[in-house]
Length: 161
Image (cartoon, rainbow, N blue to C red; front, side, top):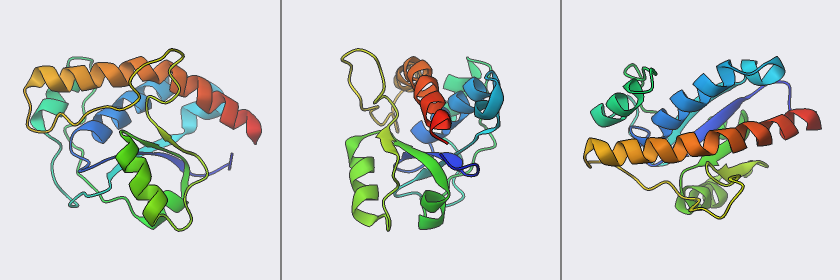
């Protein structure tokens, strides 16, 4: 794993899932020691319109965990963001497929956010866009469930250096 770069988290519009995942992973990494603590986390959307505000329900769902993402603004997934990423996480197989089809080159480490769960579980996190707060909270909880396995995987990548 390179000494520089960031973790890139992707969803579709970068206003619901990936901002929540970014906030949760930043919070989790802040509690780590060594090189994991200094990893930068960025989110973007494969079909994002730059500058849009994060959805209100995403803000509310994370506020319940003590994390504030209200200042987030959407950005599009660009080749520069992909090139600078140590690892890229998508929310669904369609996000991974878009990056595989359009990335030049395709990032070496391209996974789903829930791909490293230790048991058989749904690896995709559905889009809560436009749904009630309860759906956003469910998406948040699916992300929270994946964080320990992501941290464990990141530790193995850091050892690859």
